[in-house]
Image 1 (cartoon, helix red, strand yellow):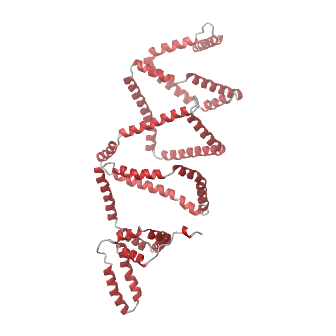
Image 2 (image 1 turned 30 degrees about the vertical axis):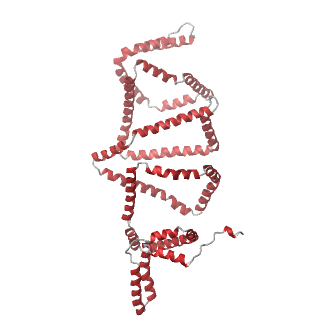
Image 3 (image 1 turned 45 degrees about the vertical axis):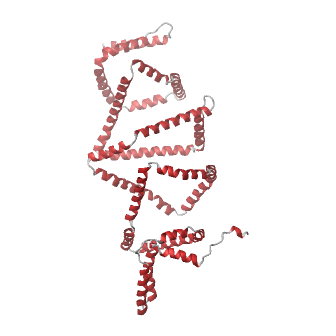
Length: 487
């Protein structure tokens, strides 16, 4: 084996060790460790000996005086210079895994020790840690950074975009996205296999999986409570102040930017549609073909029986949920009244929207423009296609009737046979009376053209089938017969 391939280990010379030690002992963190460690070491060394304990006090006082916290943290710069040396970096790279493992073991042991304490003592330790951390200083650091960014933007609003552009450009130039894509494509099987492996290993411990899944309701509850606590202070504001806050948020939204986004999305859709027509065959855009192929391959992989069962189960679940909700609503009459009234409010809102649209059309278009737009809209309706669809639907009904002549009759018989005739008659009587009473004011204007139209339709013309004449005669005989019986 070629020894030149190995990076020579750095010489752990006394000079290097001394430099590192000098820089380390000048840092405030190391001083804090020494101040906490020295008394414990000396106390263990002195033991129960009175002379050693006296000597330990003298030695400890001198050592702690040497590591007095007063002074700056001048060792940081020296430490940074040493850490940047290649030989130190290599040595740290060799020691880093072991150091990390030691730190993890120490943290785990400390956490286990704290966890073994009684609840009150564990709370005290946690409180001491929380109170000892200089959160105020951390907040001041954040504030200083924010203030620095604000001052920079006062001089140059786009400073960071220009400052980061060379770095970002170099980063983009240094990435081979083709290699990234190829690697991702080649890693798909391994990623799926890794996920499958993780699930297999995880499901070896079903109790742990159940505990993991049980976190979902807890997380949802936490999110709900957090949202409640977030909204609650808003409800403590005065109505005018709260409204002013909300309106200020709305005013801060730049409508021009929203409109520009809509324009870009619209142009994107137009270009995709145009490109689909350009790269596809004549009269056959490529996008619908691609989507159809995707849908076809997806449906080919779908288990129809499972899908049908799933839809049935979802439908049953929806019905069960609706029945449960309805049962609860029945226990709250005020809520039931509001829900029932909501149907009418929704209908009224729908009517108001159509009225507003109609008024807007009347204001926007004159007669010629309205006729042109109406004609253009009707041209969008392919009446021949609609007629052909209606014909095919009739053909389907005829085929059903030819195969099962009584299916529709039986269905209608079940419906009307189950209908309460007395209630239906009473409803028909007052409903028709109300309709007639309501139509009477406009009947002289509306009925003549309607009746004339009906008369024109049932009047046989030359060249027509005799079937219409026979039908009209039968209707006349039925009306005359009813008149004779009534007399």
